[in-house]
Length: 478
Image 1 (spheres, rainbow, N blue to C red):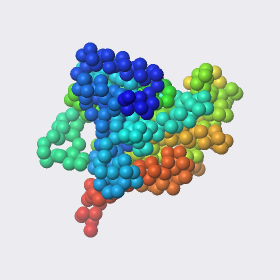
Image 2: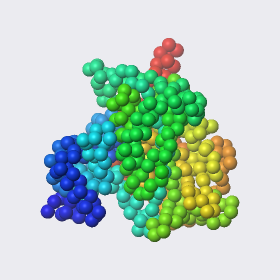
Image 3: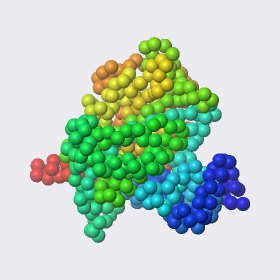
Image 4: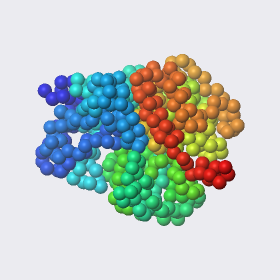
């Protein structure tokens, strides 16, 4: 029996999808198959297999070193992997041991920019068949399953901002190498500050057209491409999808945009606030609702005229507010993220809600008879790992339902209303998460401590650097 069969990892539909893919591989449709998994940062990692080998690995899995789960954003291994327990408290991960990538056949795609290449998203398992506890897709699946056990599904729509530049110098000379290496030199594609202006859009349409064609060819439900407020900034929006699908979409979208842009001489970045003059911060606004699986009814839709959401939706929203502070790190996971939370900036700075107000953390859009009634959470930014961010929303919302939490009154003046302020730094956000029993119970203390350790390593490296601000502030004065 194969690894998948021994441990009963697939549904009947997944087995049928794997058989169909194996047939196409044997028929010579593809030269290679990329086996990829989302790491703790939401970055795709994996191996590329020759088609013949991929047929075997579909059910046997593909080995992958566990040290990939020990790396911070510089790709440095920050856990002592060669000590007992490997720094994880797990014999299965010490000594840079292997784990297995097991593909999800339902995730199969043909990469349109490399048409002889197939792509599969994988889940991580140890040799005994158990799920790797630090694999974020596994963590999100638990939240989705908890909701499904109540006959409910989490529906999300993605609204993602990013910057697109012309690549001037990729900085590939040997002296530019490092962990991390020097970032590329880029040039603007537009001056910006003409929000949604057609001629500005036309200036960057050549690369947007290329991206659009590839995104649609991947089967992603793209709705709009918009010119954003800042220079070289744009936004992509997608039709709502449920459960794992939306999170998988976000992972594939980010990776595809970066790969396609680079192949055509451009640089795409989802970094929240790039260090360039006059640029605007990018956000990721997560539109969400909860539907009944049996009939698709949107449980956020209000019955009463003038109501913002149904009582169910109001309790869900209260849960998001109640757990917003310790949950911020899942929506804003980098040091750079916290440059975005500024008053009067179209980004939130405190945990409040308001009806159709873009200054609030939670923007509510709902009316009787409106099947699209929803909450738009504006706390997130586009580097967030979607599995952690979305899982935090489900757990928080369910707590609001179970505890009957009250969201309070709408904040018509979101930057003046007295409400808990969002963390001002990654350090503050990590401390809030570490001290929070709620997310420790939902994600598990093992994962919370693991994630905090990696983020503290990132912070420590930042603290060691002398910034340009310090040099300008003190070098001549003292």
